[in-house]
Length: 435
Image (cartoon, one colour):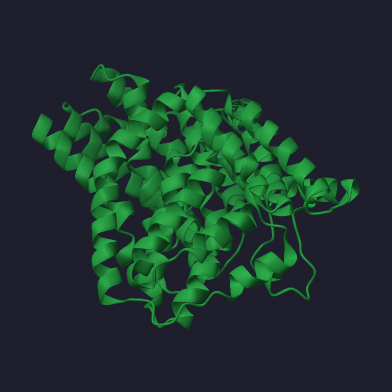
């Protein structure tokens, strides 16, 4: 009973922090302390509980290296003109009659190239939203298309922190996971595109707003050279080169372009890599093209470390054994997937972050997959098709709250995030049929 009340209290605490814009790391520390005390009350020493937490947290160290590179590459791509070039070319060739479909496709491409949903939303997403509002297109529909596209890359880009996290905790090969994700995501993607095409016809862009493109070419030297850092990731990822090496090579290329083409000083480039990219406040782009930097990843790194620390305590003390017993009842592929979906909804709602949802889902489901003789690749794919896309559908989850706040829209946008809920629905139907 104490455990149940603790979960309820922690759940409410996390929701309140998310709704009030408080960094989720603070309540997570409180939650970690609460469950640490529960572990001590079950006869474990404080020292042993701390060891459990550290043992769990240590599992996140490898993925934290990826976070450092993601922070650096985001700012490097901005300084080099890579992100502005993607925005420029993406918005320049928009067809007003298929605007909403274009929003989805452009957001998908950008998110795949940069591997971050937040980065996609805060760059090309803002630009597309400005165009939508200026052209009289429904803001919620536009935001739904942006979010669908943003989480397309968040799910299956080799640069995605969540894709790397899933590969790491399931001990699977990243590029093999990506190949499987494309296979299982193809039909939902096509169906989403058709739905966005229908909405595009019903809600065309009344007047094309291209001032963002005009401002970009005033501030940056835009040409095909600025796309080289993105092409390094896009092209060489097909050869399954280690993603950390690719990202480092892309950062070096972007830094060179920043200095030679955008005329940034070496000192400023180093500052951008650490502290994030900023433009002169006199530019209208200063609130759109900004951010990144190694330090920008500190908060999410803390969240992932604490989330991993939870698993150490839960695994060693067996606090979640009752839930695991329920998951073990699944005895077919479709039941496994359905159970993973239900667990993902719970962990996304409880954890308030995508990272905690992923880590807890993997922990609670891994034995059920072993019992059914399903390998880690199957578990990794099912997590990608549930927890990764379900977290941004929970109104108080950071995965949705931050993008909605950035775009300045309400939770009505969830209704139009077709890709996010078609992924689990379509895959569940396919597994039911194939059973």
